[in-house]
Structure formats: C-alpha cells, structure tokens
Image (tube, rainbow, N blue to C red; front, side, top):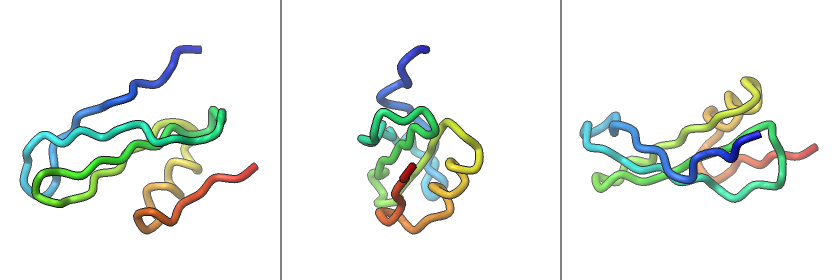
Length: 70
C-alpha cells in the first residue's frame, strides 16, 4: 500500500488562488487521510481520502471538532 501525499494543492473556493492542504496527523488508520490548509485570503480548505462515510463525516463536521475512533 502506498503512502498518501503529504501536500495537495486545490483552487480556493473564495478567491480562486491555489491553496495547499497538508496531511493531518491521525492514527495508523487506513479509513481516512484528512487534509487541511488555509488560503492566503483566510478561507479554510479541507479534503480527505479514504472510506466514503468517514470522509463525509469529516467534511461535514465543523472545523477542528472531528475525531475518528474505532
């Protein structure tokens, strides 16, 4: 199994500038690899790869409140 990328780049939804999102620290869990970054304009950008239900709960949660437990 390959390691997830540490940094991904997306277009900001607020100002359309490129924003880098960084892989967040999680346990050695293969269900989700969450990413987060902040654009220069102040917009928080989140992304995740992994299990669809887990990714959906991460993206739907308020910033900074999500946690994953087994």
